[in-house]
Amino acid sequence: MQQWQLPALGHENLQLVQVPIPEPGQGQVLVRVHAASLNYRDLLILRDGMGMGPALPLVPGSDMAGEVVAIGPGVAEFAVGDAVISTFFCGWQDGVQPRTSLPLGSPGPGMLSEYVVLGEDNLVAAPRQLDFAQASTLTCAGATAWFALAESAPTRPGDTVVIMGTGGVALFAMQIAHAQGARVVVVSGSDDKLARAAQLGADHGIHRHRTPDWAAEVRALTGGRGADHVLELAGGDNFGRSLSALAQGGRVSVIGNLQGDELRGSVYPLLLGRATVQGIGVAHRRALQDLVRAVDWLKLQPVIDSEYALADLPAALEHLERGAFGKLVLRMR
Image (cartoon, rainbow, N blue to C red; front, top):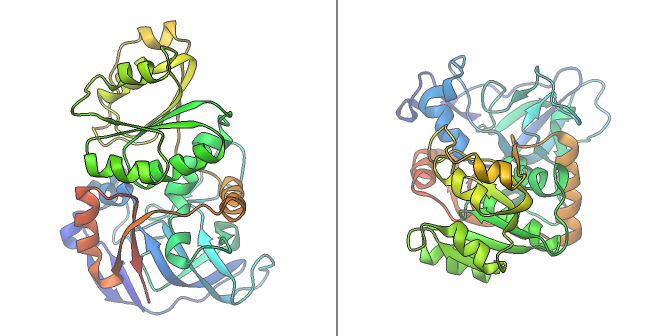
C-alpha cells in the first residue's frame, strides 16, 4: 500500500512509500481509507513537530474516513463493510482528558495511508448522509466547532456568535451556531470569502482590514451589547479585540494560533466584562458521536474547498498554507 512518511522535519522531506498492509490485532480494526482531510496542525507537525520532538519517521494526518475490511479478536462495535471515521485522540472517550491520550498524526499513528489499523475505540460510525470526503472533515474541524458550541458552553437561541475566518472549523461553527438559533458574525480579510460565507448563511460579515477595530463593529451590530461567544482562531493581538467584542459574561474559545503562539490583550475587558476564556483542543469520542448524530439529523453539509489525489499532498499543503475556504481533502481512490 502507499503511505506518506516524514523521515526528517520539513515538508520538503515527505516521501510517498510502499509498505505492507497491516493486520488488526486484539480489539483492532483494519480500515481501507477512502479520504483524509488536512488541518493547519498538519503543517505545524511537518514544519517543526510543534515542538514535541516527534519520533521519526512519522506518518502525518489525523482525519480519515473509510471502510472496515477486517477486524481483530474481541471487536464488537464494528463489522466488515461499516463506514467509519477516526477520532482525533487515542484514549479520550469522554469527560476529563487523560494525560496519556495521544492525538493522531503525531505522536499517535497517522492517517495519510491507503490502509490503517486503529483500536475500535478510536473509530466512530460515519454519518449516513455524507460521502467519504465529507465525513473525513468531522474528526478535527467539525469536532472542534461542536465542542466549543455544543459541549463545553452550549449556544442559546438568540446568542450572537463571532467567528474568525472561513476555514474548516469556522464554517462548521457557522452551521452549528445557526442550527442552535444564534446570529452569526464572520470576520475575514477577503471580500470573496465574506460573500461566500453570506451565501452559506452568515448574518453579518466584517472585513478585518477595512475595519481593524472589528470589535467596535460587533458592538454596533448588537446595539452596544456585544457578542456572547467569540471563536478565536487567529491568536496574537486579535485576542485582545475578541475580549473587547464580548458582552458581559461572554466567552472566548481559543482554538487557533495563526498569528503565533502568544495571546496579547488588555486584562481590563476580561475583568470588567467577567469574561470566560477557554481553550478548545478538539474533542473526545463521545462528542464526535454526538456530532455525527447532529449531522444526520440536521443535514449539515461540510464545506470542501478542493480535493486532491493522495500523490498530490505537496500541492494540497501549499493550498492549505495559502488559506482555503473550508476543507482540503485527499482522495485515496
